[in-house]
Length: 180
Image (cartoon, rainbow, N blue to C red; front, side, top):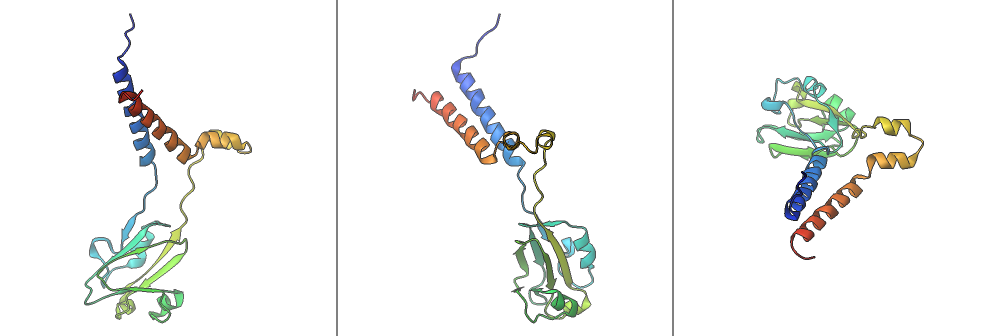
């Protein structure tokens, strides 16, 4: 014989389901990566920064961080000519704190050098920043790519989905608090 659950348990289950959905949705969002130049060896002489950069993929919104002795080194963002010739003339940025966090805000090639002479000994790094990857397409969206309503049904609009979940959450709380 089927038993029905008390309304308070049903409201609690609905609330927990809504919270779980929001947490799962939030966990699929892309977050920025902080790329520490030279990893645990930092920004110092004797490191192959070309090899280091080739082992990383950089995206718009990521950070590139330089860690070094601020009394010995610094960081300049330069153009390709400055990078090739180890010159800071026309630099577009410079840092000297020893713990520099530089946002990579555009899809382009960035060039960084040490301006205290370390560039001539290899303290320079060039990184190619890619645009953020497109969200994955489902097979349903691919089958109906010409049908815009099908595509919006597949994606549901992230803001709309979050709004619907939050409304469910508010209703669950409202019904459970005795306001009705």
